[in-house]
Structure formats: structure tokens, C-alpha cells
Image 1: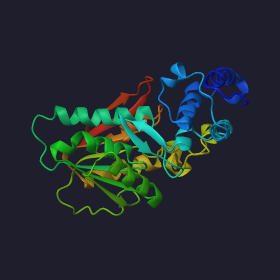
Image 2 (image 1 turned 120 degrees about the vertical axis):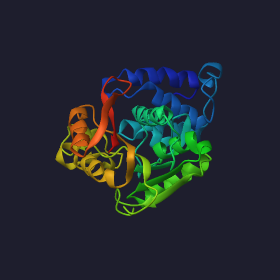
Image 3 (image 1 turned 45 degrees about the horizontal axis):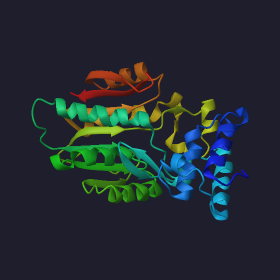
Image 4 (image 1 turned 180 degrees about the vertical axis):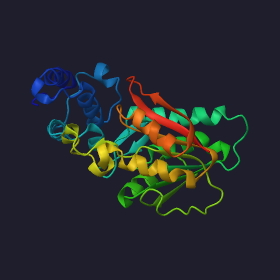
Length: 290
């Protein structure tokens, strides 16, 4: 871009987002990136239109635009993403938290609030925590209720990011463990967990959409067996780690609801149901251990 004032850049952003060759990137990616570069609040887009970017700001902004056009998501450029009203650091070792995953957090909190008696153990396990967005959001909501959250991930680099996010969001009631799903946990642990949550890889390895997600860690996105291998493993092992009546809540693909419900039933879960995301697609299935 050759424009150098906010007003000129906004005009060029309008042209960019209308250009079909740009993969229809959302305009807010460009404006949010602009605000990040010049370190100004959103109101500046209206009140400071005459602001002239310095040479270094303009160079940084233009370089970011090129990266976004090459498939790098905005969150990897800014290094952060909002989720559940909290701010999370993200990098190439973590998935970028999606708004639809807030449905998982919401449903778990609803289930806790609906329990007829106070839960005794108050232990929650998050499998494949990534940036820590699910574990930390839940721990943040539950810290005054004396919940202890355990968050595991196979990636030591992802765990570093998650630990940093726990500190920056002032959440102390989370323990981070490096583990492939349940591997580092003991089935003999007492007390068992009241709740297990997970947003595991669930995209089919042959899905053409993976080609557009090259910036994010593929291991956190795709799974064998039509995207169901990790989900199946988590469900089948969960009863060993859950107390009787404990909750398992899993995020999955929009077309996997019926299959995931059957996997829950096959592992003797009861009260199994699926909740839709904000787009009206099946997204989270929940069930209680017998």
C-alpha cells in the first residue's frame, strides 16, 4: 500500500476486501492490524483519520498485509486473540481460539450450575489444552468456587504458551501437564474428575479445507478415521477418570454429531445430547458417566 494516512488506508482496505483475488479476507483483519501497528484504540479509525503513519509503521503494516494475503491469520501477527472476554497469547504452536469453542465453556458452566447438590471434588480435566483458552476460561469462572483444573497437551511449546496465558489472566488454579491425552495421568488417582472437556483434532486428514489452514499446527486440527480417532480414544478412556455422574464434553465437527453421540452411548454414557454453535451447526456433545 502506498497510502500513509488512516483515511487513505481505510479507502485501500475497502478496495482490498472487494478484490476477489484476496480470498475475501475480512476487512476487520486489516483495520485491527492497522490499530495494532499504530497502537491506537478503535475510535481512532474515525477521530484520527488524518494521522500519518511513520515510515516504519507503514512498512510494518504493509508487510503484515502481504502475510495475511499469503494465509497467515491476523492472530499470529498480533500474537493474541480474545476468547471468553479474556486475552490469550497465540503462536504457531497453538490453534487460534474460535468463537464457537465458547459454546463448550458455556455448556460446562451451565451443567455445573444445574447440579442439584454441590459437587464434592471439584476437579476438571482439559485434554489437548493448546493455548489454554478452555481450561483458563473455566478456571477463571470457577476460581472462587475452589475448583482445581488440570490441563494437558502433548506439545511442550503449547504448554509454555498456556502457562503464560494463565499468568497474564491472573488464574492460579490450573496445573499444566505434558501428556498424550490421558497417558501421564493415573487411573488410580483419587479423587477422580468431575468434568473432562476437550476440543481435540476432528478434521478428516483428507479434508480439502486443511489446505487453507497451513499456518496452524495440523496435528491440532486433523485426525485419522474421518477425524474421529482422537475423539473415540477420549470417549472410550474417559469412564476410568470420571466419577460416577461426571460430565464429558467434547467439541467436534459440524457433521459428526450423530456419530459422536453413538460413541458416547457405546461407552455407557447417559443423558447424551449435542448442542449447536452460533451458526446453527452441531458442535459440542455432552454425556454423564454411569
